[in-house]
Image 1 (cartoon, rainbow, N blue to C red):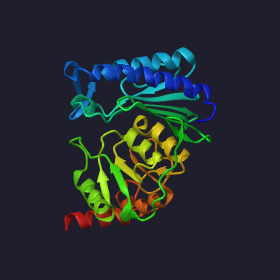
Image 2: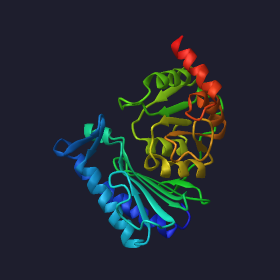
Image 3: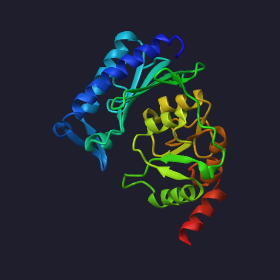
Length: 283
């Protein structure tokens, strides 16, 4: 069993389950869900909005002095200058949800002075609850999580997210995928980054990488990974990645090998590394 839960995590669990109930009800008749497009291939539904609203209401009822940073409403709710900021993705994997593919989740994290200290990821279609409190470990449904023990990259299963916006750098991503595919036992693209990180924490996959992610995609999952004994950062291995739009995670041995493999593709790579990538692409 997980240890006595921190009161803040209990409130976050309550919020995540309430949002999950809304999502599960809507999933029974996904055809009737109203969908709008924020950007090309970037969708939002009335379910995202309803789930986000109940999360914010639940959190602020318990902690009215806290700040809120949410995917759909930004920081228009909550206190503006609090050291405590809840980082919320009410429905990560909206495109999967719209199609009825049951790979999506609710992600809630609490950052204190910019550092994530509490995390909840809830998968409503499987009723899987992932939780972590800084310094107290990570759990899935009361089971303590540990990252996988695999050390040979060729035995590893790695998850990723594909670029989907017209502005994304597809050529670079294809090269990254090619590098990883040839050196691992498989590459997967489930479609919800928060769940991808939870699965690294659980040892279901050995590593994860993706570009273009926002803080609400990775805040909760990153704490799950580190509390399960893994590492998370940008592609060059820097740990302060939350606002950098690139995320790499894995068990410590796999993480190091992925940094070696993918670091040259990072926007934080050295000028020489970037030049070498460009030369290879134009060859």
